[in-house]
Image (tube, rainbow, N blue to C red):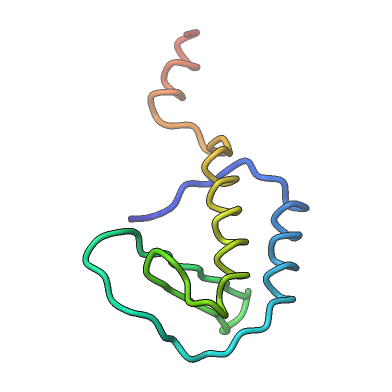
Length: 98
C-alpha cells in the first residue's frame, strides 16, 4: 500500500472536490455484503485534524450514487496521470545519458 505522486492539474482536482462538497448524503450505511468485487474507499483530508472517509462494496447504495460517480471519474483520471516522481530506474537511465 502507499501512494504515488501524480502530475495532475490542481484546478481539475479542485473541481472534483467542489463537486463532492455539493453532494448531500445521509450517513447511514446500508447494503449487503460480498465475497468478491471491489471495495472502494474515498478519503478527503484537511490540512488540520478533520477527515472524511467513506467505503462501499462494488456498487454504492442508492443515495450514495452521486459520490460513486465522482469517485469513479477521479479513479479513471488519476489512472491516466503520469507519475510526478521518476522511478529509480528512470533516474539512473537519465543520469547515464539513456
